[in-house]
Amino acid sequence: MQALYVIMVILLIISFAFDREKTWKSIKRGKNKLMKILPGYLKILVLLSLVLLFSEDFIVEYLGGQNIILGSFLGLIIGSITMMPGFIAYPLAGILLSRGVSYMVVAAFVISLKMVGVLTYPVEKEYMGVKATIYRNTASFAIAAILTLLIGLYYGEVII
Image 1 (cartoon, one colour):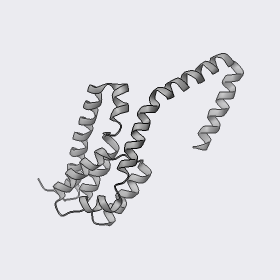
Image 2 (cartoon, one colour):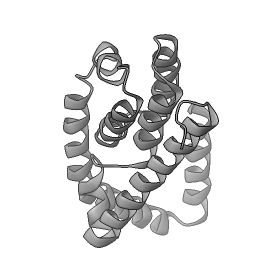
Image 3 (cartoon, one colour):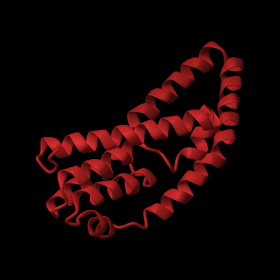
């Protein structure tokens, strides 16, 4: 990440060397765009901090039950309303598996976690529109459910 910052600073210096006026205009335009989207991102941060109150034990308790279909459905729902980066989600998936949660339930949780964005809805609707955001989230939820079922079939946890 630091390398990206260094590259950005170098490119900014080069841009200043070629045309100071355009560079300042671009910086001001970027600042204005940041100020425009900042309220939406702050909403997401507040919602995310509330969701992070869910602990690993809470997730294991509700997803690790004997009913795989109910656990998968809860995994889809909890994953859809939760938001976390991949470097936290994937180790959490490993922990869930080591604690006895089935592959199908873990797949439902992680796939919906990464694909469906209930918490990002406020920002998405401003850029893509309400209709497109709802279509995207609905399609992502359906795809997550289909992939969950396929993973359950592959590991023999569900037989059709």
